[in-house]
Image 1 (cartoon, rainbow, N blue to C red):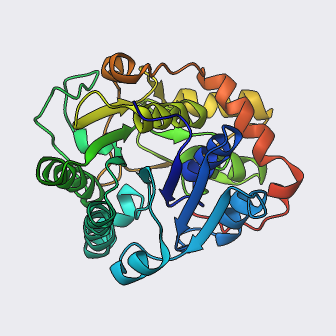
Image 2: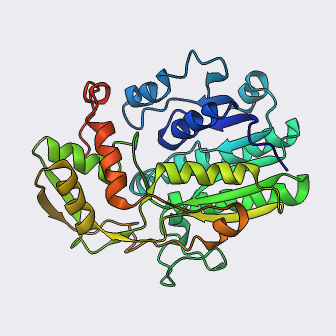
Length: 329
């Protein structure tokens, strides 16, 4: 059994999920190395804020670098007990505009990290996949046993590719690969381009929020603390050599209800601008989380309103209010 506290490498560790994971691991005595290229997909000031408190921590190391540069990886990274590979180009809609770049980073970058793991003898590899791999699958809740994946965006296709690469490296080189399909993660440090953060900021500024469709689309919103718990479960899992596991909340919230909850928690009223549905969007996401429970005790515990309250405390904090965020309409 892998010990709870190890030498851990987190790629993309300055981002939303990675920085929350790093914080949690440090409180448990782990040695944490973060690799991040600080890509300006959104204001890098947010990423710097995410890692600021840990830069002087004796068990924390930050390395600025790119997963697309295998020589850099070999020269600057050490040996670790587990790799948590979160680094990727994110976003369904941007991937439609720039699919080649997404393929390069998300597929070749993942292969580079698997090669690095093979070369260093690192046998535990946790991969951030996505609920988007299910695409337009009408069989809900979505189960990992449903192998008929129907991705409808370049981003989703790169995550399918990452899972398949993991199977190859697990089979050929004895790397334990656990692919985690994240379902609409939200909470403190959420990326500013994602709907909850974007809508809350625009509503606080009195701006209209763009609502694509009639508000009936549904998402399985999962609080970041629950996701972090699931990742840590996967980090210590040793029951088999390859698994793909949903990390969701096993509950869906409509777009209309999401907006209403933000209105209630923030005490503000939304001004809505109706827009047509966007290419690549799916009508709903809905996770069956039984496999995660059976394999490593994954059990989401945060209700949606409770999560939005925690998000509000973060976004209205003095240090976050001081950051300049570009409007993304």
